[in-house]
Image (cartoon, rainbow over the protein chains, first blue to last red):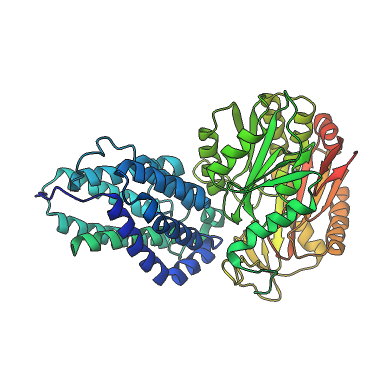
Length: 217
Length: 330
């Protein structure tokens, strides 16, 4: 049963997560770059790293702002500072999260789930990609579905988050044998098979980092 | 990596600075957000054309800003789509009230960012998406074909119509016609190196070529042993003709485009081979373009674009143009 009520989403939470994610992404940068060079053009990792740096650098400007304002500032920074598909998609994610109603109240776990689900739905809409197309959505959509289940079910939160890390990892690995129908890799046909999608890998690392930090809280 | 670089993070800014200084008679470079616009204001009633994309394809698109072509271009980081605020700012800067037509190459990042830019821009606007690359199979389930070198032709031809008072609808219609009448096929002998990456995007043997390569060094149809120019050009043209299916004696524009690292001497040799092959198939070449227009950094290779021309296309192709990279008739 989910009983915790406070502090599941705040500007400070977002900044501290961005810092954690930055470390993990940097540690895995060479691998993600190599994946992208196999089936893309190698820009994904630089876009993700640039985006994280920009968000972390926003700390002083946004740390005292209400959540909605903070999210909007993050969205604009990500949207205008990254470029490529990643910029548009992650910018859309934060912009939509900011549109969740009642952000001025305490954000409990359910509400935080709702925000993330709203954000992922908007990414899906923007990228017009669904599960099975060898993109980051292969990780994010199943994660969103699981969050929806957690939000309305009786699973223990930490247990649920640990299940999510497992889902993200399985789905990331599953992109290896997919044919790509969206994004740069779609131009490769059969040749994209046998390579994990770099966007799926970076998304999985992001999900994994956030979930583990909540589990160990 | 051996490149003219001071600091990787300043690469784009310094290059844009130089571009602005070198062509200060035609264009102006605006920073934060980055866009290149004409030096003079758009005349009233003229539809504004805005294109853009990742940098690294120079002279596309900044080199095509000027009379008879684009009103503004939005450069992203090397090989990364520009951001929506760039398109919004460029549109606000150039629109004289007749509306804005965005010309977008069919790449997921470009499509998404241009869409968001168009949503953020409150004025009248529309978009055309180029997808001339016949190396990629099209289907309703996929991203589809890439937008590559024919984008140059679309920008020139629609640019002329806009300059001569064409409406937003007419410009869009002509742009779509040019795109539909074009087919492009590219071949690469070497990789390119993205400055931020510092190493080649792909490995390729000394005796190999990538057939059907994209303009970011993304792999194409297949990896093959290098062959004579005649054989390579013949295979490229076959792929294009299969797709375009021109009529016997149909007029065409033949565009041989360098990827950045291949000298003009070779591009003209490719042009010669293409002329002979097309002639033997009864296809008439009435216009030509040879040079580095849609490049992939320092990649060695070339693409061939064939455009089926009607009178409207020819008239607008011949019309005066004055940009950093293309100038005739004025």
